[in-house]
Image 1 (cartoon, rainbow, N blue to C red):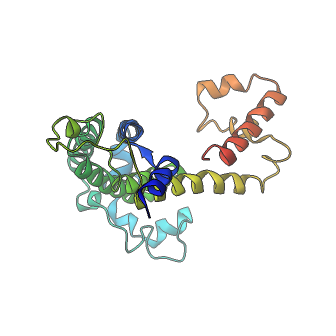
Image 2 (tube, one colour):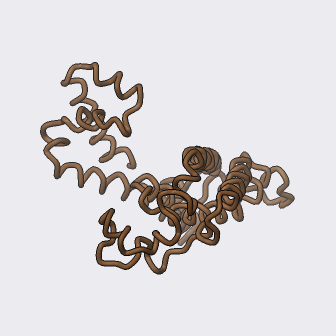
Image 3 (tube, rainbow, N blue to C red):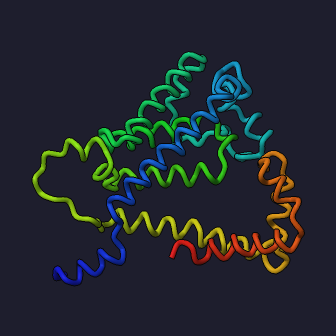
Length: 252
């Protein structure tokens, strides 16, 4: 492939190093917010004194009770691992949370970025596997984003790593490789398959009542969600169709 063709492909499929830096900062903040949210229930959800002690995690009774893996003898897949399972004490879980938060700070400022994102990815998996009953679709997306981030040059801009880079060779404005392509395909798949699945439900199409009903889930609805419920039904239907259209065309 000649230089001209590669340059055109980079302009189309490449990722700007500054955009990747903004993504790195946002990713670190999301993981930190997730840690804060989970730490509020650290004793109840991640210790042996909580609702899911380590012994119960491998119990067929508990697995059957929540109907996640009724055919298995364990709620946790045999190939899944978790550092959080090494000790069920509150002090140990708190220690892992602190380590994860420090690593998120390193990712946020771009210090030893590659090692930081690998460690954050590993600890994120460890935390999710400690209590699989708490996982939802957003955790799967976060895990996927952290995985592909290990192969992206997240520390090449707006970072401590870039500030102390002694290489005289200037960095390109955009980068394109297998990792950037895989990252973009992953994003497209997340939104396009989500939209395709939603179109199978009449609540999304053609009725357009999905937003109306979802805002009635008090477990997830925020104050802003309750505020939206005060709007007329046609407005909420427009929001439903708007969300569906965005998921179809947004990634492109």
